[in-house]
Length: 465
Image: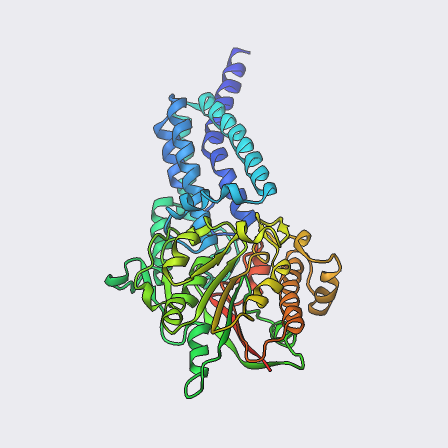
């Protein structure tokens, strides 16, 4: 009887020891499966932490916090295509402007993670400091050596992010180094005179293509540049043709259409078009060689320059660097709220509610250049941000889209139709419009992400007759 109780106690301790090695890795594994990003099934650092902190629950809790943060940063780097983990701190500054449902989901997630952490610490105390924990760790590493890969994360290896064929075990530190190497394009070639900004190659922005159109011809006196949030290049050419056909109208003439390369986030898309630069960081204080940016070049030629952005001027610090690059007038959320409607995907102005204002300012005398960074087709794609609930019925059945892909397409359609309508209501002969995507749309499922060609966005140049 006594021997049976002893065996039961030893089995309980051994089970707790195994649990203390495996339970801490489950949140990161669940997140990787949900977000469909690369992650090994086991991180060596979690095993080492459990062994080093045997009998020291407070040490284990502190180490677990650090490793979970590292796990989060690892996933963040893949989703946002940034190996600069300091960008997380910059994004945390956007919390006051985030969607309320996202904030509540984040709080609920932190509470759930804290509860799971409490369970992990309790199991760890039950299983340590016995030798069974060491034996389990050796067994796990032995299996990892014998079975280096586990065929469960199937995805093409040429994807920078998304599920890869995952290793059974790995090291967060070593894999982070691998990720930096995989994203070397994001960091290489930065000229010393522009610091963390990399000049783009010739003709790698819609603006540079637009300039080619004017070789040997007079520059139009009215110009509107629109960087369209999350307008990506679809693999299905029918979908791409749909957006081009949308702009067919008696007074609108398509001058050019094509593709440019894109990298990173909205910020990179903006500076690619406005300044011919790709920043390595989200923390922009000063733009190097700002005198070469398009708004400054036009101002020196006597143009009036305006910028419209429905978000807060604190987002990406646009309120600081927009003036540096030459925008004499800037309209953000505070200036647009009187005429616009507040949308829900993030605190900002609905694009369709300010299209008339954008077009009417171009009617003012003199040479006018207006820039517009759209907002509502930013993830999360909210149907509540549409001008009418029947908008999805006009686009989704045609393109055979459902779910998030339908919502994303409906938001793009709503914006483009509203801008087209404003051009028809307030025709301005000679006005040239350049529409270009900032980056490919970001979805949480790999199938939706794979529907778009990575690193490429479309552009379209239109003129009002």
